[in-house]
Length: 191
Ligand code: GLN
Image (cartoon, rainbow, N blue to C red; front, side, top):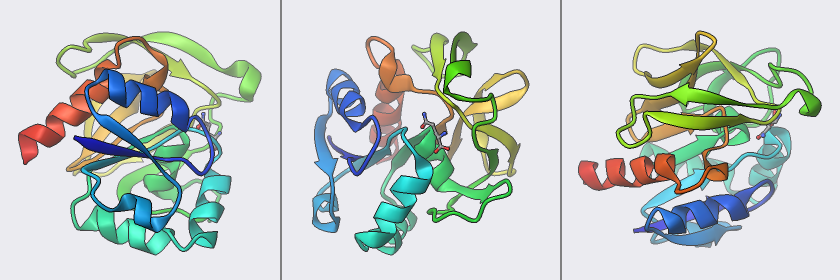
């Protein structure tokens, strides 16, 4: 499977490694033409405002939205989840707006308040995983079509809406990439 990682900003290199560990061929995506031939795309963590502006500046926002709407499976983590969310509390920043979530950015505080915690998930093979939360957002509301696969403190941290997957934590930073394996195998299963 050919999996792209949006490589405009953020921790795309760690995702590319995780995708390879999970058995995919990973490609960095920096312009529209890099999207062709991909079976899946990861939107990494980083700074969602910067990624949103760069997507607009490089003319990628609308075409990417179209690609996702026409069935390109996508996995947004942390800033990537924010880019996918329909609603961002108190902000009107550039985003794809496809995932029926309301999110609060930097909900746990500043960079120094970042933390690791054990998460229980409904993902086969990843029932207990370490969640790495880095200046993470919090999902404060999820629409009815959103499946919640893990929560922390009563708030969803791993979700799925059809072929749109998202996490508020950083699954690329744990060994053996169990969440990336799930993403890839879910795509295989849906083909
Ligand atoms: N705080 C960042 C934002 O709002 C997200 C942090 C991350 O991706 N680790 O975009």
